[in-house]
Amino acid sequence: MKKLLSLSLAAIMLSAAMTGCGDNAEKSDFEQVKEAGKMVIGITLFSPMNYYDDNNELIGFDTELAKAVGEKLDLDIEFTEINWDSKEIELNSRNIDCIWNGMCITEDRKQTMSISDPYLKNTQAMVMKADKADIYVKDPSGATVIAEQGSTGEGKINGTIEDDDTVVVSAKEFFANSNYVPADSMAKAIMEVEAGTADIALVDSVCAYGMVGEGTDYPDLVINIDNNFGDQEYGIAFRQGSDITENVNKAIEELVADGTVAEIAAKYNLTDMLLK
Image 1 (tube, rainbow, N blue to C red):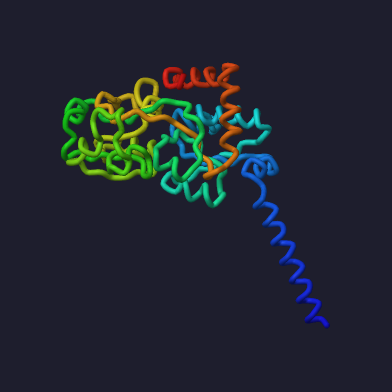
Image 2: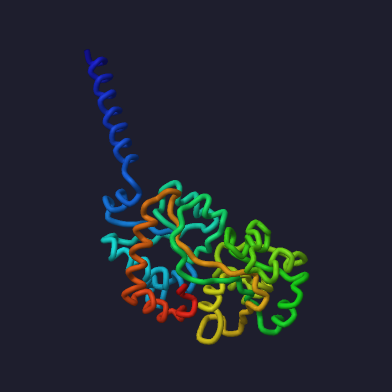
């Protein structure tokens, strides 16, 4: 009798668990985050998108825009640091609900993720020490070039991101005789140039202008975008088929209309980078 009772109880618990899983599976992504009351956003740290200020407070253009969207959608926003090269894994395993961290939109990413409407312009910038800049802008042969692993910069260097009609100079061809090494982040890539362990960092121009130059931690480094390795646009990534995308798009449209986006962009010197 006890054995039968135990088996019956186990069957009931299994049925309940399966029913619960089924109910959850039937809910859309947006319904699930609304039920949780929060949206978990995967980020890496780089200025001016997501970074810590002197008071150890997370700030930045993407940070503030995400919080403003959260208010529109009545959701708390939770930020978590991720390895950029594993961003799709983090997203699809549901450790995070979206990637909101100055992510360039590419055709490959469109095939694996649902991506928001573009909201910022970007290109790839060379960051170098001033005394070598004139040489490396013309010929980086023999130089050590560094980019964030999994980034657009790395994709351009390796040729995994194909050149489009906005490209004037092919990064794959330009850096063919350079020594490429990956970094954990764009911030780390710039640090390596400052330290002299790399000669050129290929990073997002938005990142470069936020981190390099007068008034930054790297006043002796210079930025060059003259080679024009192609135009990019930033987007926010969600799981393939996610209905969070359309809700975030709508919220950002409203924030553009009421001037909030322009106000945040001005705060971080990104006004010229906004898509009109």
